Image (tube, rainbow over all chains, first blue to last red; front, side):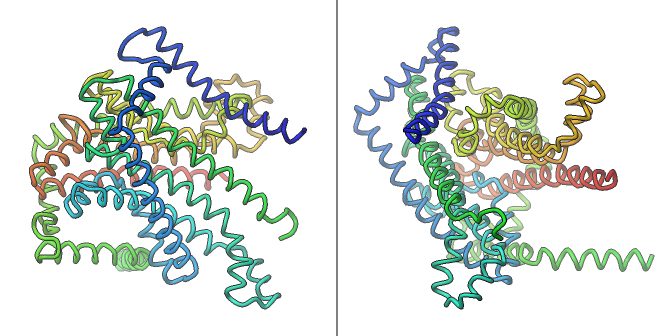
Length: 258
Length: 266
């Protein structure tokens, strides 16, 4: 019973902010009463109506497919390079400033170069999304691996674990919370990169759908699509955050047992 | 004179050694660009020699037209977006710190705020406000407000409890406490927020200009791409990168000065 109560309390806590935002939106739209400011229900019905068209469903599928491919690529490249750089001092010294610099530059300005090299197709959008999301994984995983507490290495020495067992039983569980945190950021940045790429390409995915409707001044439908994009961005990131917290609780060392 | 020269030499050697990776990357990048532009690897329709890129940048920065139609509109929109994002970010951050109820409700969503693709709102702003600076500024401001908010909250969370007690002991009003105690105490976090906020606002403005605009550096990049004017496109990209580097450099310098002053104070 107490766990059910806790669950309900958490759910209601999570629900307050979206309900508040929708309430404010509805109140403001009713107050303004203009076709340039659609009410939430108008945006929602427009979105449902848009799902009736096959082209729109295809665009949603294109965005989700491209996001999945790009996320899988940027996460695996980022994890691999981050782990390699984190375990080698020399590689870290060489890569760390480069990765920090690449992470700080505004990647959007490079999109036309991707278009020139790869063409106006799905490949350029995937590669640009990977470019947007992979560096943050490399940085987080590299710094987590290189800053792993010495007690873990002592543990490996004491139990005389071989390399594989040490990685499986000590190092990987210790790195797991950081990896999940990196994956959460990676998903967010990859999706932002993808939406920018779709907006600039103009005809593909949900970004293309928004641009198409902008020319037709269909504000209700645009608002509905923006809501869908926000949902695609927020829900997986929140799920990853939940898993991250559970893993952190499971693997984080208890205070005083250092 | 000799001492000064040897100090300069030591400083140069230390910096070159420290940034060996970045210097090596730049050299490799320039070599790749040269090889790519002059051979069949990419060809002249994708890459231009690095000297042409720099020339393109100088052309934009040297021409009055380049300033008037490209650089100044982007800079002014970025400044306006930052001017909007900074006070809003600070105020929302302070509200979340001050009210535990509001924070409890908003906390689960703070972590997902950076994940929201704000750029998707730009077409909406264009319909509502027209193809004007307002749409650009709003997009830039929405992108910039998140780092400002999170940095303000981080700074206020890390305040030592004696700061608040000090305010109460001296009978300061809330405004006086904010001005005389809290703001100076979180100045480090605020400058970090300022740096990221301004850079994000600039990215938001340039990206929006690339999507749809009739002026600005983003528009220039888009138009140059459409016309296959690669020299102009790469030149404008270099101008944007230089601008972001200047933002990071100048605010980073202020940050270091503040850190130094805090150190001296201690």
